Structures are given as structure tokens and as C-alpha cells.
Amino acid sequence: MSIEATAKSAKPGIVLFAYGFRCFFLLAGLYAILPMAMLYWAMTSGRWPADALPLFVWHGHEMLFGFVAAAIAGFLLTAVPTWTNTKAVAGMPLILLVLLWLAGRVVSLPWVPTTSVLVQAVGLAFFPALAVVVSIPLIRTKNYRNLPFVLLLAILFLAEIAFHARYAGWLEGQIPDGVRLVINTVMLMIVIVGGRIIPAFTRNALRAMGRNATMRDQPAIDLAAIFSVIAVLLGDLFAIDSTTTGVLAALSAGFLLIRLTGWGGLRTLDVPLLWVLHLGTGWLIFALTLKSLWLLVGFGWAINWMHAFTAGVFGTMILGVMTRVALGHTGRILEVSWAVVVSYVLVSAAALIRIFGPWFAQNAYIQILTVAIAAWIGAFLIFSMVYIPVLLKPRPDGKAG
Image 1 (cartoon, rainbow, N blue to C red):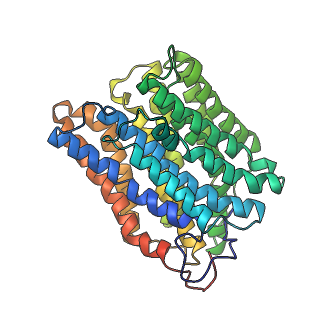
Image 2 (image 1 turned 120 degrees about the vertical axis):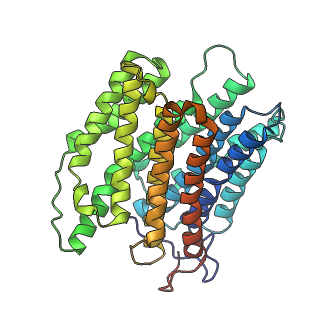
């Protein structure tokens, strides 16, 4: 489903808060850099507050609940108006959402004490607020098909509670792994959204170029892919790191591979805005395969499979969707510069280095992480430099949005 701008009320010249993608994609691009930079600083300087979350735990929290959350917000606040044919959230309501996200980042800083109930509430408030904003137009227009996204936001909220409960000692007994719950929930979002936009974007572009746009219609495989990912999510909740979960991951990778082969990806190799989305799905298949190999066979080089999801899948898909949606919604030609293509390459390079580097160069752990961090920062620094003007300036056609 192609996403087209629907906002009609934004004032000319005041565009940062005219549509959700503008402010939240800008924040996602910039915040993809900060936790990585702080990770490098702490690793090389040896400075980290003793009473804060452990360095890598904090880093994981901020990449998921900061960077990924901003990208999700930007997408949903842009997609829902199209799905419902309603006015986009803009102006003060959008500003308040942004301030809530920013407040969450401030209270998550390692120097901020987390014992206060108010601090905890602020840190947890973003997903519920986003869910309310998203659900209102869906319910008003009876768009029940997309209400599951509200449920997924609720699961992300519960995952953040589980994360803090595990590290702050809020609850006793066995607590679900909040990080894995987030990863699996975002993976499910990507599978659902990707199944809609990737074949649609590909078909439309191929037709516009006069190429063969025929694709296999395989609804049964689409459903199998979605439910297999749900099964992986449940496996990590109730049978974490088990043979069962490894088998489920392998089955899910198989269904996603069959689905991907029907989308005509090989016909898009000269269109970066398209192949990056196919590459993101390829990363998802690869990540699930790595996970299954680690759980079923125990290959040492597959131990960092989780970074295949976070850096490989999320990094590639978020970068691909942000670059495509930002151009389409600002009325620009759907083409990217060579610099943006370099950012696509860098994010995959960062993921590959982070996954396999520490295993194959165990005596150079810090150096390997430094290279991976530099590649990741480079990817999103390029995105920010290229797209900040796109996100801040009014549409060249004079339309609102």
C-alpha cells in the first residue's frame, strides 16, 4: 500500500511539526548516532557511572526505545492518516509527543537517578501516548484491519516495563526478556508492513519504468510468514533459547524466503530505493537463520545473531523506509543520491562487522567494535545531512504536509 500525504491543515513555512515523519525521522536519524557515540566514548575512556545501567544494557535500551521507537512513531503517524483518510496529527499534539519522547531520553541518561516514580513514569509514557494517538482515527473510521498495530504498541510498552523490572528489581521471580520481546515485536511489525509496501512499491516502480511488474500472489505464504514470526515471539517468551524456538526461527526464515522470491527483487538492482527494502527483508531471513543455527547447532560464529536483527534488519529497514517515505511525502522525485546509497552499504557493513568481527578477531574486540560503530554512525550521519533539509523545508510543490 503506497503511503501518500493527506494532511491539509499545516501552515506554509511551519513544516517540522506538520507531519509525524518530519520530526520523528529527523530524531531517529540523529539519535541513531548518539548512543553509538556514547558507547565508543565509554569503551575507550573507561568512564561510566557506577550506579547506572551497565553500558551495553543502556546502549541496547536507547537503540530500541529511542532510535527504533522514533522511527516507528514517524511511520505510524504518517501511515494512519492514509489508512483512515483523516487529517494527520500536527501542531501542538505532535509537539507534545515529541517532547514526551525527548523526556524519555533525558530520564534514561546514565547520570539521571531512576528511583523516582515520576522519572519512571516519564520514561515509560511514550508508547501509551503514541498508542492513544494512533488508535483514535482507527476506531473512529472503523479501520479494524490496522488496529493490531495498537496492540503491538501495547506489547512494546509491556516490553519496556519488563526491561526495567529486570534491571531495577521491581518484580521477583522470572521476568520476560524485554529486549527480545521488543526485537520480536518490531520484527512482526516489519513483516506485516513489509508485506504491504515492498511489493506495492516494487510493482508501481517497475510499471513506471516499463518493466515486467508481475508478482506471485501468495496469500497463504503471507499468513504463514506472519504467524511463524508470532510463534518465534511466543517461543522466546515461554521456551527461550530452546530447540523449539530454534526450529520455529528456521521455519519462519523459510516462509519469509519464499515470500521474498515472489516480489521481483532482482528486477530492482538498479533502483536503490527499492533494493534496500528487499535487502532489509533478506537481513530478516539471515537473522532468523543465524538464530536457528545458534540454538540448534551451536555454531560459535552465530552467537551474535541478535545484532543481525537490531543492526542488520532494523538499521536497513528503517533507513530504507525513512529515505523512501520522506521523499514521497515531500513531493520530491523518488531517487536517492550516491551518498544515500553509501549509507545503505555502511549500515549493512556495520551489522556484518558487529556480528562476525568479535568471533573471528577475538583479540581485537575494541577495534572491531570501533569500526562497526564508525560505519553505523557514518550511515546515519549521511542520512541526516541529506535529509534534514528535506524534513525541514516545505514541499517544493507548495502543498501542505
